[in-house]
Length: 82
Image 1 (tube, rainbow, N blue to C red):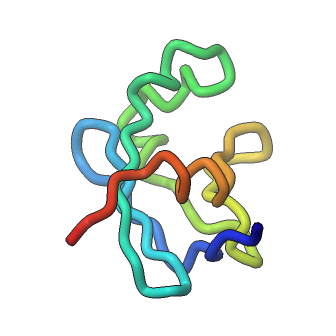
Image 2 (image 1 turned 90 degrees about the vertical axis):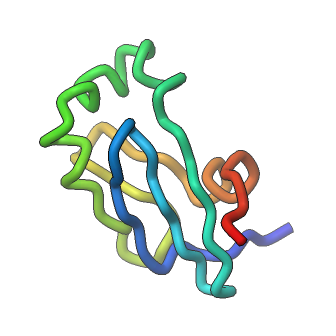
Image 3 (image 1 turned 90 degrees about the horizontal axis):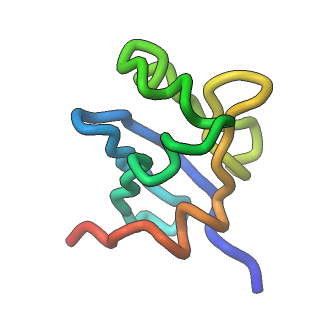
């Protein structure tokens, strides 16, 4: 099964991402549960967290060369925004 690609991402307060997909659906994704994992712990820094961008092709959101979240994860576990 193919998943929609990421069109845009916005980092908002309380470590929430708002993701818009190429099918025009929007979802909220709370990264707080991930912050306890070593890979994601640098994102506790709100300044770094807000630097998130969409990876070329829309397959993930990325912060740097080592921190990313796939479109699969965001689509399947994000909360739909109505």
